[in-house]
Length: 242
Ligand code: CA
Image 1 (cartoon, helix red, strand yellow):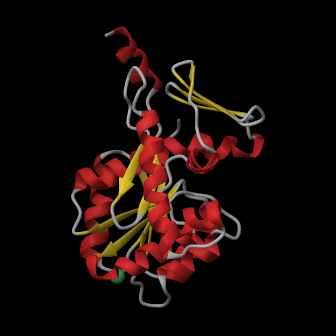
Image 2: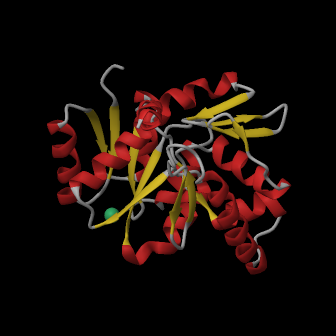
């Protein structure tokens, strides 16, 4: 893969410099924007691979930058928010952001989130030619047959568990918020559905934990939601040997 280009949207020069210095050190290309309008223009004219987006910008709300960009682009957007902006972060994820970093964050965290987003790029590009079979490590979902297998063994899922796993799989690598999931599954996001979601998610994860590699397919983001992680196929094979 050619060098990825990262757009860094941040009005605070010290945070912006921390990010760009890190990107430079790891040989990524980058662009910067100090406000929302510039961010939108840079995205349109340079088509970056990933965007780091501060939510508190001088000219407009970061969430509005996401809404605008999402009208034509699916590029991964990693939101950067202060701890006091917890509700903004959830709003940003609902508006189509993929992931988030909370200030203060470490360079390692920044790079880890970036790698997750970069791994999603081939998936995003292939999304146009959607496959009827989803594969992630030992997990296989056959959409037309409505079957889920783990290491070749069929999992007996309830209809709700099946809906949950397919929703997470279609959004692999992306953090889905509790309201987003409950709305997709039950059509509404009342408190009672939040409680049901936790119960169904617990039983689903139990069924997923019985694989040979026992890979962690579903990551919990406490107070926010869940994400399906891309399991490295190499890891899975390695584990099968042991
Ligand atoms: Ca700011």
